[in-house]
Image 1 (cartoon, rainbow over the protein chains, first blue to last red):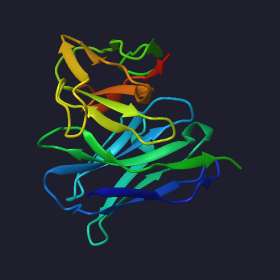
Image 2: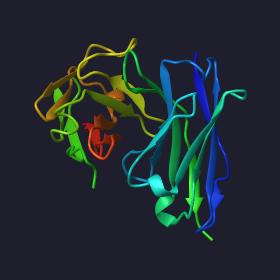
Image 3: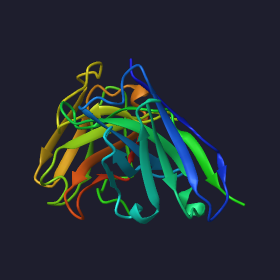
Image 4: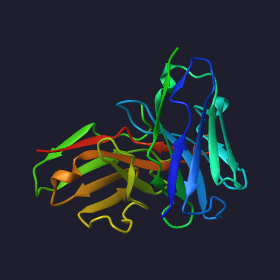
Length: 121
Length: 111
């Protein structure tokens, strides 16, 4: 059973860079049927897609965040990572990683449990 | 402001049928399929409906989805207390080189 687990600092200072890693277990990140994505949810608010990556390194990002986002993949570790630069309090959120099926469902499934990142000095 | 519009809340009593709407535009729902996610309190979202009306394995047939034009709906029949959750619609948007968009979410309360 595929599982995803987010990891990284829970507290980031304003203007610094937020860095998170998603570790995939129970399956290979190098499958050609899936993209791997990051989605965030500010406290008490809705979901926002940040961006996605293919195992080859091909990426696409939310236009509203594109200038500050970098997503990368490390197939040797079965991980993919998120970097969000110049963070402000508005970037405080639970960050989820998820797999997106490109063949059957075309949807995000499954999701990691999420990790709360707070931006504060 | 979310690109897809959902009512912030919905409610029903056990056994009732409730529907949740999701309104979009020609660049998202109008030209792509809709997915629905269920988020139980304190947990990560879970895929509930994909490709407008398909249920993943394990999702009860009490949950159904539909799409017409630039709108979609999620219906829950035989409402149960464990259905109390937040529900989100999502679709691919073809504008600006493409990106995923979500609705603002609907909090379903079982009275």
